[in-house]
Amino acid sequence: MIYSMTGYGKSEKSNEQMTVIVEIKSLNSKSGLDMSLRMPHFLKSVELEIRNVLGDKLLRGKVDANIQIDIREGIILKQYKIETIKNYFLQLKQIVDELHLSDNNPYLLAALFKESINASNTLQNNEEELLTEENKNLIIQTIDETCDKVNIFRQKEGEKLEKDILNNIQGIEQL
Image 1 (cartoon, rainbow, N blue to C red):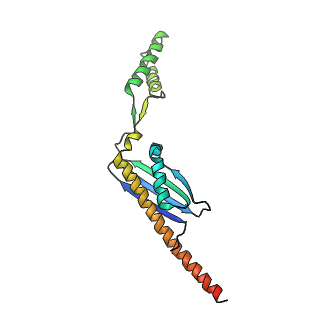
Image 2 (cartoon, one colour):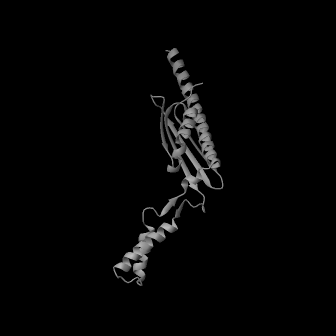
Image 3 (cartoon, rainbow, N blue to C red):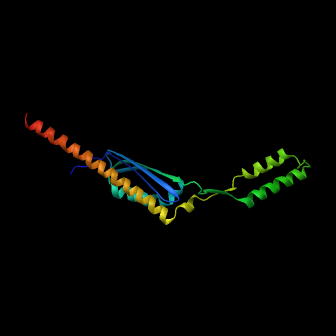
């Protein structure tokens, strides 16, 4: 059986926290397996495992894989660090008091609050908490299913190539 290196597959799987969408395209390549992988930053800790699954299933070709994670509504990925914001606000208010500026001015208080919230370390990123064993398995299963679709596509393309080659051989033999 002849397999083409050209293939395409797309899969989508969901659970109560997320929807995983994986799209893979592969093309002919002179050098074994050339892989390009786009994915959310919080998956970096499992990137090697993802690359191994792709490599084990696809073997060769120029492979472009895109992993998209859509988080369900209501899942909070970032939280404000309330104590940190309070500390910034109190420090800024202390500066206002020491400079004898009026802290009764609502615009000044709003500006102090805005400055406190926009400080660099007032947000805590909770994306890593999404990488539970269940969610990791969902991601790997979606990748695995997409690789299977790519290989089915490659097989169909290979069958077309085989027919073309056989037709060309017959044409040459008739000369």
